[in-house]
Image 1: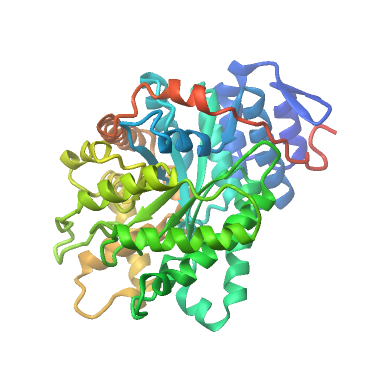
Image 2 (image 1 turned 30 degrees about the horizontal axis):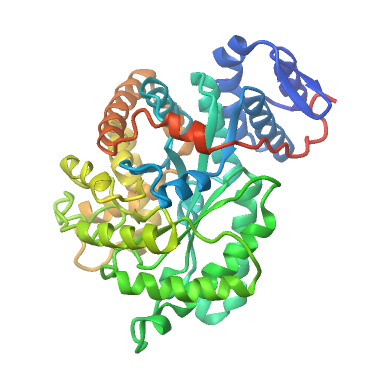
Length: 462
């Protein structure tokens, strides 16, 4: 891949594959764009230190994608159709890509094209944006670039996952923490994230005597951010908003907690005006993010309560018209469990660490050792008493994706090929079990993607 040095080099590349009509790019040589130019555009958008060039390449990728009918979109209307029980029987996979985002997204698009999949989401959490050093505009550029490379066209659902409130910071200054979440939300929407999961579940206080009181800070903050999102939506787009009633890794959620949350949430939201509310609800069923590492580094088996998903999904659809419950922390579960999620009408499932583990499985030992040495120095404060080295490394190695971003991207071709082949097999297995093969027809019926053209940066094809 080539790293463009300046906007002049970017312009030369763009002129070879596209032309500017007003503020819109029109692709004139798609094959040439897919062959090499898109690789260089994505690489430059990630690794250039020139802020103006970074912004210009990211704008160019989005503009080229939209010229090819690759459009960031909201899954809201499809979820509303699930809530009306017009469609169902599948669970939407939401995939968090922490590293090698362009390469790994290409594997997803290959599968999507081969199996006519429409219902799939790419997402990144607030915490991941930090430690993987992927701002929303970079993440979008990598995903849309991957779609161009693989010849995909249609809506691409990009999601802000766990836009989570920090409990300590909220206790110190509620307004400042709320503004932090709002600022990230605005940045994400501007980057084409038209699906946002608001997560003040960290503020649930189980010491309170009633369910409504326990959920109060949660539903009030969720309503506040919902209204903020509605104020930012581009014309014609209803952002899909998710909420959460149980902090992942905490106690299992109940129908009664969900109903208490919804009663409070809808009351607060009505006072802010007429607007669509959430389309799904995240719950706790017994899992933990990344799984629970045992002293030898293997992952403990969890007792996942599918009844939580089934019962809350049923109430979500029949009483509130939502798509259902969302399962987090699932990628490290045994393969044989994944077909259970559609059976109990789980709306969406979030998948991250299992794919990260495959990447590490195929890393050359010298690179892995370099990363582990780095973690032992820079994250030694996270090595808690009683934790084995294997547990510490398993829990912290996700935080190497930012500092070692270029190392991951520039792995030898033969290493990448084996790694990506293993990822492709895992995607195929999980997506098939979630019953999303041949769901493209649902997306065509319910999703009408809207093109949004951000202002062209100065100097691009001027």
